[in-house]
Figure 1 (cartoon, each protein chain N blue to C red):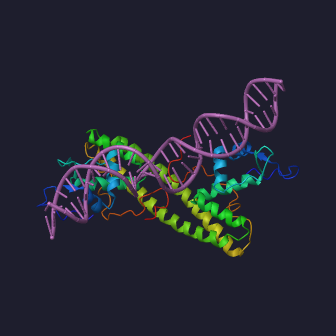
Figure 2 (spheres, rainbow over the protein chains, first blue to last red):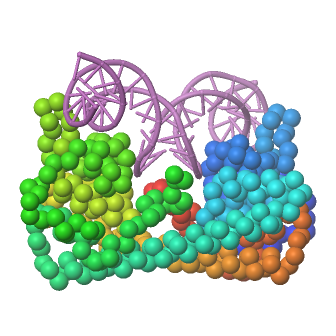
Figure 3 (cartoon, rainbow over the protein chains, first blue to last red):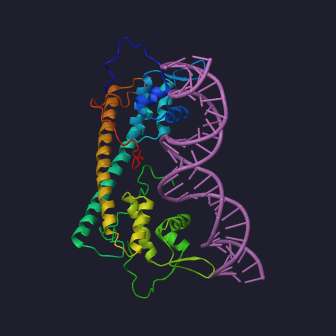
Length: 162
Length: 162
DNA sequence: CTAAACCCCGTACTCGACTACAGAGTCAAG
DNA sequence: CTTGACTCTGTAGTCGAGTACGGGGTTTAG
């Protein structure tokens, strides 16, 4: 990621929050927010209280972003980070987390595929049908005879634990 | 779902909110909420104001639930419902919506698959590596040399429109 | 030296999809 | 007739991941 060209000459320059934000492509407020969540602590502060981040902050941020993308919530990420910072190997914890996430991912993948198929089928149906008016075009009903009883209504992630 | 066995003898019996809730497996509050959102209006009210739903309410709810599962937001669904109730064929609108959703779905599917692969790879790496402590186990970094630069950081659905 | 640009903190707001609660009225069984 | 289950309205709270704002202090370029 274009970051291996500088190695000598830069003795871990400290960045102010705005620079980090710009470099990482996140908002300043997000950085402060991450700090509150224990996700990314500036390595120092100036006399006057300005946050100063080491360049590793960018890596850390990347870690956060990528973990997020992989389906972890900020609090999970925070937990991992905390573990790791406590010197304890977060590996087993993290591994469990990851295993679980993989399982969830598989489920969601399957679901999404099913939905995709349904949508496509529905669409086809309409296309060949011309315009029936009124009634909602039978959007979903009867595309599938087995009523797949969707269990994760919350398509976003992680149905709320009832 | 098991609803074609009653056809004669039941002159579209009216259901009270609690019955609908039970039959549909949603909370009463959710039904009232849906009503506020224009998603499901009871067909009548009693003198005293009790909501009375026809049996089609169950179908409608199913429609809502399934549309949701297919990735539509409640407001999109409401729009569709409104269109259809206005007598105008929502089909073209809906078709566009659906086409778009399919595209989005494909993207998400691809993304998820990629993430899945990454996760699995990471996990493998750990498994073969034993426990390194400190540092976050290289959770993500360097699993993939091409830095897939994730564009939809918001994995939930529909990155906020910048 | 001054003004613009940057940064601080704390609080409050956003959005989506609900859920909870308070206080009051209604309905069916015993 | 009373009790308890059910329903009404309206407002408020939840969760996640931030964003926005107000009222300051600080740094830096000109």
